Length: 229
Ligand SMILES: [Zn+2]
Image 1: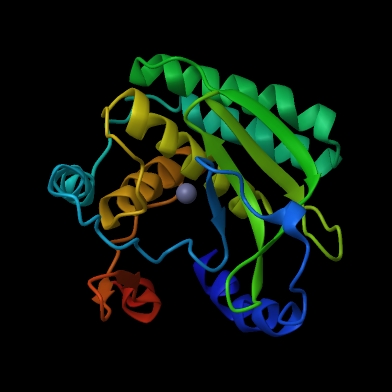
Image 2 (image 1 turned 180 degrees about the vertical axis):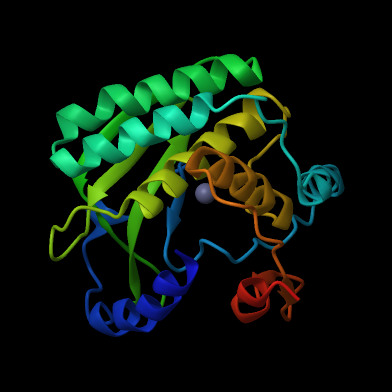
């Protein structure tokens, strides 16, 4: 999953460099979205001391409780089957069931879910753009995930789709279970997301290796993460 995304990144950057204007694609305020470009890059810590403390709490929280059985994995397999059928109507109920069972396990309210067709393209400062895979609204507790690629309209791979769903659900947990004031993309956030995703997918969790960048942000070190050392 990660290597494929990493390889695609320059292509998207090149492909959409000239797409500068469609304001309708800009993300709404308070929507926590996810794209190729920012998926494994942490945000900067807030300047405000109280928020910074919350950010650090999120950064340090690298684990997530998991059920002792395979209830998430069974539902993930249903999502894989529904994806093969390639209709949003078929996928939405199984995603809702997955989220309902997960919310029940974590003791939080069930989030809403909408499965949509082709991903919107999000344009950023500087003129480059990326595809939006999913987002979450802490006000409406609503998750949206897109099941087709923006340009070629191909169905998203199961791994990408499931990891997006887990990612957005982890935003929900940040607000509803951990009571963070915001749901930042911290190292801890990505670790929690990976724990949930690999458990649901039935694959072993890899240790994530991080590299610190200028300005205090962290990005994942994919070669080390793939090697495991
Ligand atoms: Zn996110």
